[in-house]
Length: 336
Image (cartoon, one colour):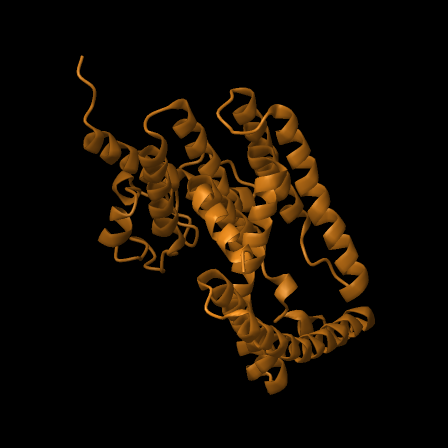
């Protein structure tokens, strides 16, 4: 019997990914509302009417219905086609990277849980504990079957390290700024990622996730500060972002000689000290507001209230496919 051509198999996997993404949408929404996602039929979340079979075709139904419910004409969330496409591309990427092997199947399962965890975190800043625990078990099984580059012992140690790192950091920040910088869900995500990747790669994932969080969160915080007429704070946030980017480009592309680099480092340090002084002052104001309980809404623009799970998961996905490239970038960055 002839093997299925590579291109045909890729199409099958992409379509299977779309269908899986459609199911993941249901799991995300019903996990948050504590509904059964196996037995109950699909329905519009607004008018509650059951959907016809042709209204459940991944992506195509959204396009055909022009993004609106066929019954109540309310807007359908862009989450539906977005999750379906992301899942399909993830499955296709797994197949292209690892061919049709047992590892590909495991990677697809892992990516599915990544989508679940990121989906609930984005939607309501909630991590479903069961999803994280199942993913942790899958990570351990991944090592037991020798599909991973780490041993079972390394997976267990990585899992413990990930959980303790975020729990300790969260409890320390609670003492310093009055609230946890990371939710308990972030600790559970790290628990699962440690089981999949081990300590060393998890450390890279954590560093990347902080970078991605800053890249996305700092512009939002600067905008909120500007909107609240705190210009010096807005400029401080932007200085931090510009400082991060300039240090990366100067180090990675080796743009300066030793003397020029010394002057550059001195200037960056001065600007960052001024910026962090303003940011710390704002954190202390917010801490006092929390302690006095007179205006908890004052924390709405805070960096530490933005969901960190998606940044962790995005970084883990990159390491799943491009770990050797990431290591090369880090090595090139560190060698000045």
